[in-house]
Length: 294
Length: 279
Image 1 (tube, each protein chain N blue to C red):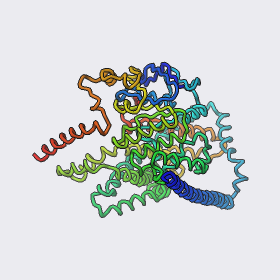
Image 2: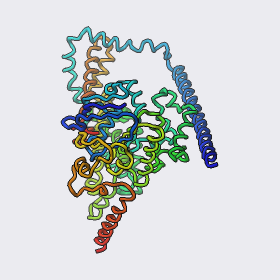
Image 3: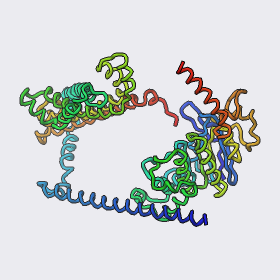
Image 4: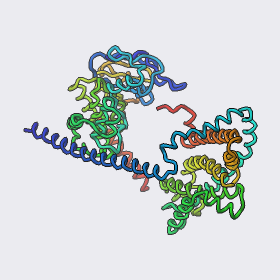
C-alpha cells in the first residue's frame, strides 16, 4: 500500500514537471521565431534602404583595404619615416584622451556620490544629478565637439571638453552602480566622530570603491583614445586629423594612412596590456603575481 | 580497478601531493582524512582531471587516464563523478535541470542549450531525487534549497552520470550535523545498494570511522596511513593531524552525539560573553 502511494506520488511529480518543461519549450520556440523574424525583417529593411544594396556591395568590402595595403607595400621603405612623422599627432591624441578621462573621473565621482541613495549630500536632488549625467551621456561627443569648434575654433581643447562631458556621464553612471554595493558601516563610523560629508566620502567610501573606479576609468581611457582619434576627423587635431588628410587625399598617401593605422593599433594594444595588468593587480592585490593555489 | 602510482602535483615551489600511491580493488567506500592543506582535494581533483598531474600515473580498469585530452578526457570525467564542498550547482536553474546536467557528456550542446532532454532522462532524474528524499523540490530553483538538500541534488547529479566511481570532496564540511548525517548516509547507501566505489575526503576522523571500510591518512601531501578503521589508533590519528597529546577525536567531531559536549562548551562561552557585555 505504502509502495503504490509512493510510486503514484513520483508519477504526479513527473507529470507535473513534464507539463512545466513542455510549457517552457513552447515559450522558447515562440521567442526563437520572434528573434529570427526580427533579424530577417530588420536585415531586409536595411538592405532595401541601402543605396548600393548589401549583396552587390559585399564583394567589394575588401577593395579599399587591399588598395591601402598594396600602396603601403610598394612604399614600405617610407614606413619608418611616416611612423616618426605622425608620432607628435599621436601624443596629442593621447593627451586629449588622458586629460578628458581625468576630468571625467573627478566629475563622475562627485556626481556619482551625489546621486547614490544613502550617500547623497542632498537626497532630494538625486534625481537632478541623475538627469545631469543622462544629458552628458545622451549628447554625442561629435555634436558637442562641432559646436565648440564653431565657438572656440579648431584644436585639441574642444575635443577634450567634448570627451570629458561624455566621460563624466558614462563614468558617473558606472560609479553610482558601484556605490550601491558599498558598506555604510565605515561611513556611519566616520559620521559618529563628526566628519563632514566630504570627509565621510573621501575616507569612508573611496577606499572601498577605489579599485573598481580605477578599473572603469582605465577602460574609459581606451575608449577615449578611439574617440579622440575620431574627433580629429572634424578638425579637433590629433592623429585623426592626419588620418583624414591621408585618406581623403586618395591614392598617393595611402602609405601614410597605413602608418597611422599601425600607430593607432600599437597604442590600443599597449594601453590594453597595461590597463589589464593594472586592473588584475588592483582587483586581486598581490595574489595576481603569485600562482593562486586552487 | 583504480591504481594510482607516485602521483605528484606541484604548484610552483609547493608540492601539494607528493608521490601518492594507492590501489583500489573491487568496490569500496574509502575515506581520505587529513588536516586542510594536506593535499586531499588536489588528489581528488587530479583523479577527476579537473587539474593535471605534475608526475605519476592514474590507471582505471587497466587504462591510463592521466594524460587523456579532449573528448576522451570528458568521457572519463563522465564516468568519474565529483561532489564538491560548496555543492557547485547552478543556483538559478531548477533542481531537475541541475540533475540532468549529469547527462551533458552524452548529449549535444544544441539539445542541452534548448533544454530538449528526453522524457526518459527527466523521469529518471525525478526517480533519483525521490530516492534521496527530495523529489518534492523538483521544480524549485537550486538556490531556494537548504545546504543539505543542495548537496543531495549534487549527489543526484552524480548518480545521473551513472558513474563507475564517485569522488566526494569534503561533502559535509559546509553542513550542520543533522544534514551531514543525511548526506553521509546517502553516500553509504549508494555504495551498498549500487555497488559503486565512493572515495570521500573528510576532515573529521569519526565520520571516516563510521561510514568507511578503508581509511587513508594524508599529511603534507604524502599518504601516511592506509588501512581499516580499526587499525587507526589515536596515536596514528595524532600523527596524521600533526597534533599534540591534547588531541581527542571528540574535538574534531561533527556527530550529534559527541557534539553535546561541544554545545555545553559553547553555552559556557556564550554565558561568559554575556556577562562581559552586561558588566
